[in-house]
Length: 155
Length: 113
View 1 (cartoon, each protein chain N blue to C red):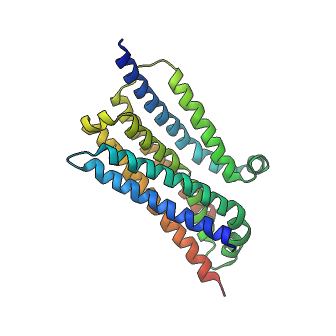
View 2 (cartoon, each protein chain N blue to C red):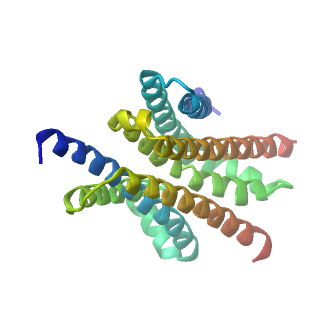
View 3 (cartoon, rainbow over the protein chains, first blue to last red):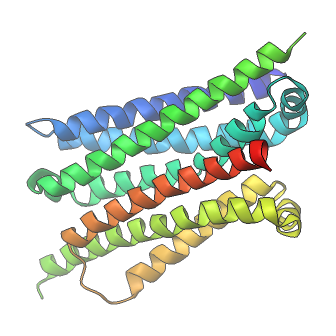
């Protein structure tokens, strides 16, 4: 793997994890007794940009390198399911995340007064953040599984 | 209606339209995924037009999202926070179903087919 692909993979992981942390933090901020709307807006922006960046870097790595160099290695290994199930599911489930992150970003920036005043709205946003974090963790664990299968398959 | 009310309504409508766009995308992603796996000509069309089927699915999702958002903003209706809360719940439900459908489909293809 050359340094371009390595960088793309590293930034895909780092930005994805940063986005997960941002949405976990946002969920905690939404549960606080005194709401800090400025921080809520900043976390939503960081989370959205994180997933957007992770999408672009991961997409580049996946399209330009993974399909040509890694996929065949996994399919020939003892764990072809790592690609057939984990990678196939991961790459498609990931597509949900930038849209969900954008929804949260728009809602907290457009309706900050309602975030403060309406408890039900806050609960809905908090639940949406929880789903984003849960999907992000599942995707991260899938990525670890896929990487593990490549390492295990190497002679 | 005062200017303040109208601005508030437009913000609610903007927010509602963004959620609506995401709801349609939540239905679209599993549909495109399964369709491309079951219909080789469709997957080839995605590859030929977008360089890679995955890029094609992403681009189509973004286009549909923008289209539905614009439609949701133009169509006249009275937006409300209750409606937005309901829409968030629908979005979450559809995303979770979509995730299960995608994972279930690829598990079926890998182990049971």
